[in-house]
Image 1 (cartoon, one colour):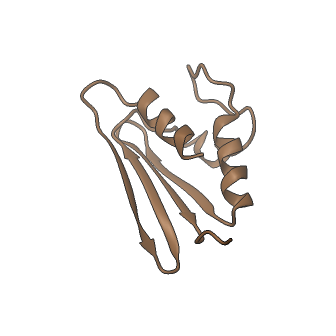
Image 2 (cartoon, rainbow, N blue to C red; image 1 turned 30 degrees about the vertical axis):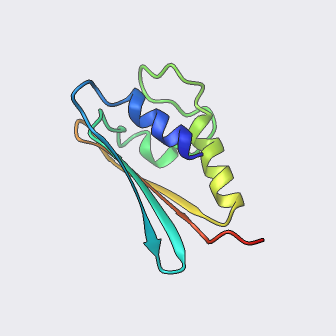
Image 3 (cartoon, helix red, strand yellow; image 1 turned 45 degrees about the horizontal axis):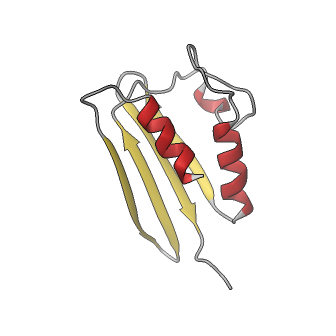
Length: 101
């Protein structure tokens, strides 16, 4: 799931842009943020990015990546949210509970 988020950031950030991955505790959970200075996600698409087959203009993907990522994270008791501004970039925040054995 994290690999898909990072792959999206790489694909949508132009040369000279930046991608940052941070991991830190958030209460009893772990929070992972992936922030890029890429093209951003349009406000029309953003509310639906976790639905299957939703793609932005000019996207060459299948529209399944973020839907599957969402399903994997929620299956592990976590959450994922995306904040984005067109032309400025995107931040994806994943929160996961501690692993249990």
